[in-house]
Image (cartoon, rainbow over all chains, first blue to last red; front, side, top):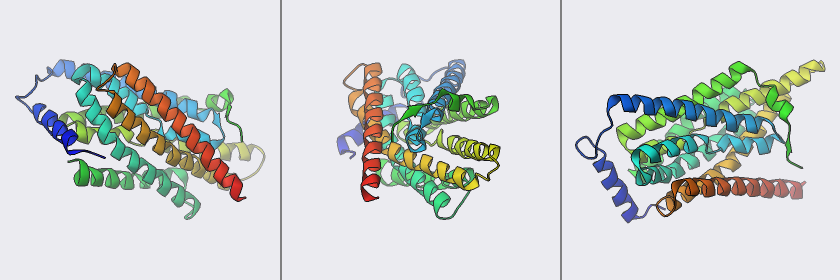
Length: 143
Length: 144
């Protein structure tokens, strides 16, 4: 899934991002960039969520729980500030995050159906699995 | 089972529920950016698939089902829980489509205009999600 040549390119780009590598953005510009991320990210996530709320049946609406809302907001801003190669490498590791999301959703469903947990409690508890799975793949494969 | 768009269901969302989603979604987007700046794009990219929408959606679905049943004098607790479980099942299927989206952006972004790559990837996500959902519905119905 992650060929050595792509990994080498990712490593090169990561090294170039260290201080003294590529040009660093001034602090004010960074603050504006993160403010923009907050607003755009919030809007995109809310829009996808509201769209999902209006859909029936519930299993179809649940597809929007895995909508690329954070990705769309982040990648659009990232490509403007850091370029396509940077955004592309983020998309590559997003695959690992998506695998973790699938496991997270499966576990949440099991906690609700088999162990009869409340939806929010199950969703928040299963976040530990998302973190564990995503970090595990990052440490084992991507790093 | 047909897909329906019911605007009244979306209108049931309270302003503070929308605010929570906005703040949470915006916060996750900022955190993804901060982590990418600090640890590199490979680490930050993991958080592009963070479950930002699902926890609030599952909570709202459960709550609205309980309220709907309560209006008829019924408990609705079990119904609410199962509705949240169905939502989780949908998210599980949607994650497969999200993997396809990520692969599409990763491969197409270096070759195309980025906006075009995102648009194609989003169409792939939607198509894959719908197809996967239909297949699993057909699989369930054929086993009944």
